[in-house]
Image (cartoon, rainbow, N blue to C red; front, side, top):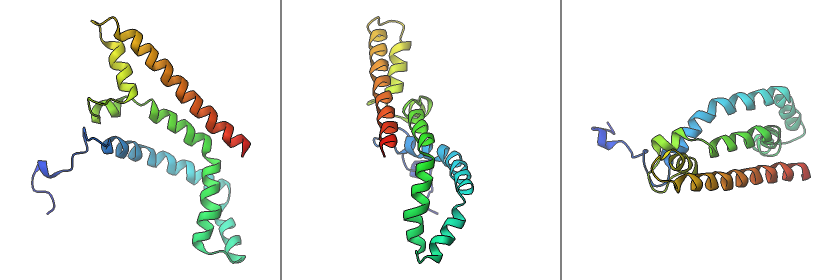
Length: 150
């Protein structure tokens, strides 16, 4: 009984905060990350570690906070970084669900490089793509370097 008409649905398309884009990426990532985390859970035998910690006096919340979540995130860190790069370069979801202004960088690059009539748009697209690629690579290198230091 909450929704009587089509206009009663929340505006998740072309919204200012990109909620539709975020929700779609989260919805797409959930099965993939569940499989990754489940594989790590079974490989690291987290049930047995939890039982051992409980035997030594740890509470359930402490087991999750101090053992399970850090081990899952630590083991899946490279996969999470690669998924982060994938999300930064995604084109279709922001194109379909995003706003015209401001555009996400991948959509802006594609639109400027495809435009046939303006000769100044192609060099701009190449420069934006290069700067964006350098920023993404620097971010990945810093994340992976920080991980090696830790």
